[in-house]
Image (cartoon, rainbow, N blue to C red; front, top):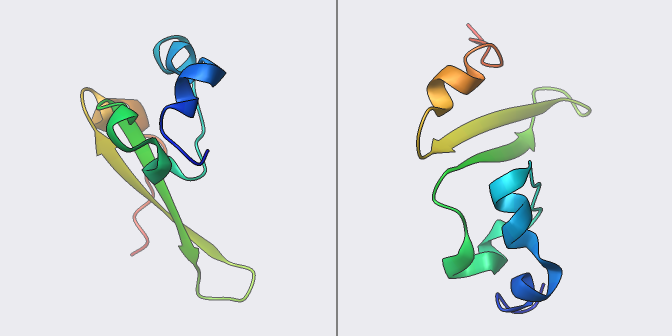
Amino acid sequence: LSDPEEVHELDIEDAFSDAISLIEWPDRLEYLTPENRLDIHIEPGPTPDGRVFKLEPHGDNWVTRIKDLVVDPS
């Protein structure tokens, strides 16, 4: 997407309400980014092939929904 208005052409808004949508560059959605969402940040891990996933919930009920996914690294 080069402009947030292209979201309307793709009917992504329907997917936001009815399904899971993975958006690689959500900042391009600007004001159309859903308030109720789970941001997933992928960062380099402790090894060359390792990755650390950080989950950032926005909106309702995420703590309950993702509690089984969260692993305490300590």
